[in-house]
Structure formats: structure tokens, C-alpha cells
Amino acid sequence: MTAFAPDWLYLREPADAAARAAELLDPLREYLDDEVVIRDLGCGTGSLGRWLAARLPGPQHWILHDHDAELLDRARASLPETALDGSPVDVVTEQGDVTALRAADLAGTSLVTASALLDLLTKDEVTALATAIVEGGCAALLVLSVTGRVELSPADPLDAAVAAAFNAHQRRITGGRRLLGPNAVDVAATVFGRLGATVVRAASAWRLGPDQAELQRQWLTGWVGAAVEQLPELRPVTDVYLQRRLEMAAAGELHAVIHHDDLLVLPPSLEVAA
Image (cartoon, rainbow, N blue to C red; front, side, top):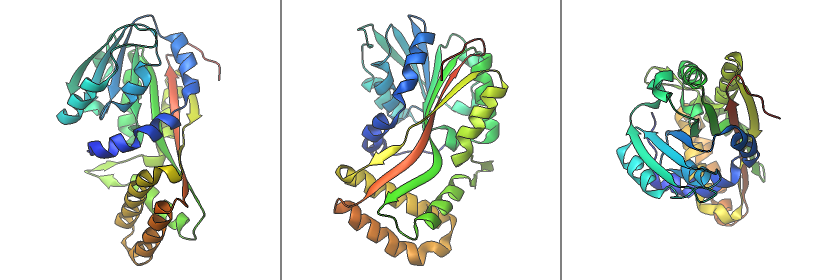
């Protein structure tokens, strides 16, 4: 699995929180029991747990999964101690590969969560995870998966070429694994549907304005860098392009919409209003 620097995860946290599809929480609350066990896969610094724990009522037992021990320590120490209604929240961690989880590992779990994870997986890994969740009788809230759409304002003639190269990079083969990238949400929704689960999909775009210049800077640098890694012949024009875009961000002249989708998945026996 890909490693992410804590500083980047903290920087993006406010944008993540603003983007998540909060309308999915009402049907989720209706489904969950008074006391829940939540497994957060690829938890990073605990951003999703900090956001969600305070929005769900009742006692909560969180199990945080990540391959990075440092991130697990940060996440465990930072989740809120109380739920929406003041009930206690307790946290434990499990270090390991989240793609290896199966239905037996999810026994007793009420809800599986993940943020910005699906697009880092392969089709087989998403299929195995979906199967584990459905066979385990769990609900799932899988948020902030990229869809491949980026809107920059003002527009630039090179935007489309950079976006296409970046999306190809997201679908690259790495370590013998073909990543799903922007196809991940479609694949996951299809697999869950075939397994009989109820799936509700909602948009969750980052909307970065002039007050988020540092996040714009780091996102642009990574976005263009990945595009050039995928298509090196772009470098002669993207060096100038990136500098131009960074100057606009620093001047407060750039607006960016980076599209994601969220999925709420409920077990096959349940229905939810769209």
C-alpha cells in the first residue's frame, strides 16, 4: 500500500471534512445499533474517525487498521473520547495489510469505513473487500474516491492533457498490481450490487479556493508530477504550466474542484431511501 506523509494528511483534512457527503449519515444512523464496532481501513492519521465518531450516537468501539505504525499511534491518540450524544468512544489499532481482511476478520463489526482507499486498490482487491463486507453482514462507508474529473478556473489549454496523464498514472501497474484509480467507485458499486447489497452513491468534491493556497500548491505539484511520471514527454510544457498555476494559487486567483464520490453500503436485507 502507498505511504502518505502525516503533514499531507493533516493539510488535506479540512478539505476532506468539507467534501464528505454528510447526507449519507442519516440512513447510516438508522441502520446502526445503539452500540457499534467500527473498523477504519487505511486510517492514516485518523481523519475520518475524528469526523465520524462525533457524528454518530451511542457507544463506539473503533478498530483502526493501517500498515504504518506511526500513523496508527497518531490516529489512536486523536479520536474523540465521546460520541454525538456523549457516549464513550474507545479505540484500538491493528497493524497490517487491509487487503488481506476476509469475512471472518470482520466478525462482530457493525461498520467498515475507509477514506481515499478504493482508488489505490486493484479490481481483485476491491472484489475481495466487498465480499468480506457483505459476507460479514457489515455496513460500509467508503468515502473520497477520485473519479478522474478536475475543474480548474480559470481554465488552461493544458488542463485536459495533464488530467488524462494523471488518470493514467492512477491506473498504472505497480508491484504487479493494476490500480483502479478513477474506475474504483464504479467497480466497487457494481460488485456490491451484484452481491445483493444496497448501495447509495453521493458526490464529495474538494472545492479549493484562494484561502487554501498551500493545499492548492501541494495538490498541483503532486498532480502534475504524477502526470509527468506517467508521460515524461509532457515535461517541457508542464514545467511552465506548473509554475504558472502555482503563481496563480499564491496570488489567490485559482479555484479547483477535484471530484470524488462516496459510497454507503448496507447489507442485502436492508433498503435505504436514495
